[in-house]
Amino acid sequence: MIWGVERLIIALILLAVAVAVAYTLNRRRPDPPTQGRQGSIPEQLDRNDFDDTDVPWLLVVFTAPACDACDEMRTKVATVEGDDVAVRIVNRDEHPTLHERYGIDTVPTTVVVDNQGVTRLGILGPPRTGELWDALATLVEEGSTTSDSSG
Image (cartoon, rainbow, N blue to C red; front, side, top):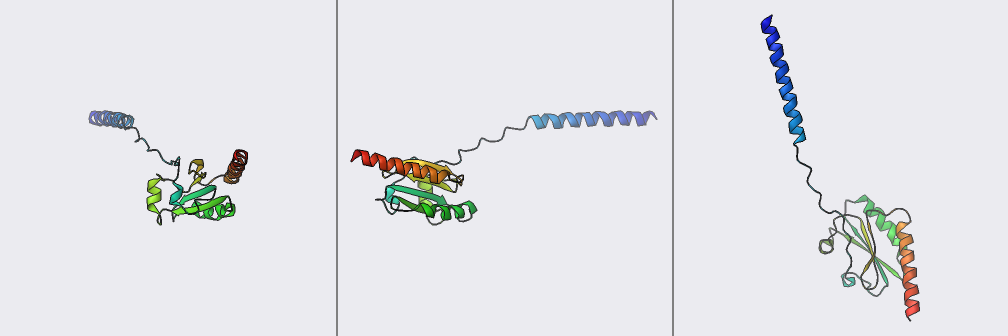
């Protein structure tokens, strides 16, 4: 019977040591690696990289083929194209150099630039309902007011 008690004590000690080691190893786990900055919006686009450089506003949607949200964006932004706004879809597979040049790492990324190519609006991911259209309408209205008052 003494051997049985000794074995039980040894088993309990080994179990306690195993729990202590597991707890210590779990606490010593390194912090997760810092995440790189995801999702950057270019501050400016070279209007010469796109057609219709004479249109006052350029709306560019950077997309990728396997992106369902990008497919929805293509349909939605087509409705805003007009005399004052040109819309360009830049698919990563068709124009990888533009994605690389402008540091696009999130799709869809929507960028609205003025006639100088300065980014006036940037949205990472699909915009909330009405967000893009309201902002674009405000920009176009401000731009027409500015050009009317300067001329």
